[in-house]
Structures are given as structure tokens and as C-alpha cells.
Length: 286
Ligand SMILES: [Zn+2]
Image (cartoon, rainbow, N blue to C red):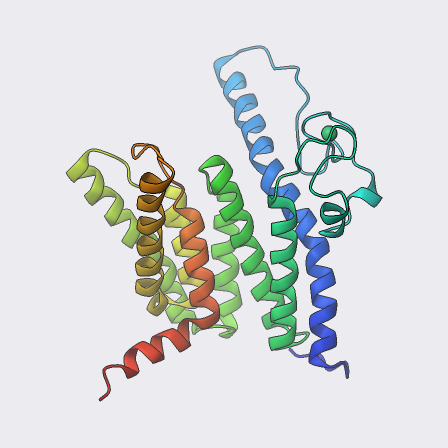
């Protein structure tokens, strides 16, 4: 389903960039508020289950309360909430209390903008662009939440997996066969690693969210990308983990989020996986 608008690729990329920057602000809100909303729900359910009085504190959801400075609580006006521009204009500080604004905001906005520009340039206004953006933005949000909370919410990983299977019903990225085997193999491979690691060391090396995320990646791009994703994510994860211990004195018993590495490796495999695989295989063709 391609729509021809008679617009140049560059113009589409420009529109994509603006659209992505705006969506990036929303992704920031999801990264920061979805975990708070989930924790609120879990607390309420637990109190209900235990027969305790309901708590009275204000609940946070993705839409309420309105954006405000986390330090001085001053509400942020729409004209101070322009993606990227406001951060640069305010020099990364709150207008009222000068508290530093997290670099996450402009970074996520910029990434979201560049992703939309890239896919719009590559695939124009098509279902491939639409699916690729949902996929990329879900990974971005999952990586952000996992960094903050060491959590990959089912509310994102599971719909992402189902959507991958659905997109491949018509072979958008890979055949349905590859997609179904990818989802199953993605989940089960890490599930086996988890239990092997636990039996040998008595520790939990990763979480169930990681299995679900790899299942989602398998659903989107098929089983044949899984070895590359696992290799890339564990290798970079190990390098970053060791570098953290050596250079910044990270406590080696502190769990490190694996989701961001899986998400990054998954995104690379999604976009350049075929090129990487064929380049790698051609090494052995002499
Ligand atoms: Zn402030």
C-alpha cells in the first residue's frame, strides 16, 4: 500500500522529522509515566487483595497531571515544551528553578525525529514506514523504561509481538512461517539460557521481559535474525558492563538492564540485518 503524493523523498524526510520530534515528546511522557501508572495499579490491586484501605495519593497516568518541572513542580507551558528547541533555548534548565532538565528529553525527541525522517525517506508514505515506526518507537520506549526501572512492561512487549505476527500475515517483512517460528524461538531460547544460568549459578541473569522482547523481535524479522541479535546484544552488553565496572566503578552485583542492548541489536538487525548477514556469509564464499 504505497501512496504517491508527488512529494520528493527529501521533503517527506523533512515532514517525517517534524512529525517524529512531536511524537518524541509523547514518547518521553510514556517512558516516565507508564511505569508510575503501572506501579500505582499494582499497589491498588495489592491493597485490594490484602484487604487494606485504598491509598489516597494522587495517581499518575500518561495523560494526567499536566507536564511540570519534577523539582519545583511549576507546570510547563506549551511554548516551553517545543521538542528539542525548548531544551536548547532554555539551555537545559528549568525556567523557574534552574534545575537541570534531563538530557533524555532532547535525546528521545531527536532520535524519534531521525527515525521518522529515515523511514519516510526510505519507504515514503507506506505501510512499511508505518509499521517500522511503531516498531522503532516501541523499542525506544522499552529501552528508556528498562534503563530507569529495570522493567520491560508486558503492556508494550506483548502487543509488539502480536503486531509483528499481524504485519507478517501478508509478508510485510518476512513470511508468516519465519515470523511464527521467530516468536517461539525468541522466547524459548532466552528461557533456556535463563534456566541454565539459574541452575548453574543460582542467580537470575535476566528477566521474563527480555524473553518477551526477543519473541517480539523474532515475530517482526523472523527466526534467522535471532542468532545475530543475541550475539550483538550479549557482546555489547558484556563490553558495557565490564567497562562500567572498570572505569566508573559500577558494583558488579548490581543488575544491569539488558533490554536496551536487545532493543538496539534488534533495531540494527531490523534495518541492516540482511546486509550484515550477506556480508558475513560472503566472507566464506572464497
Ligand atoms: Zn523547576
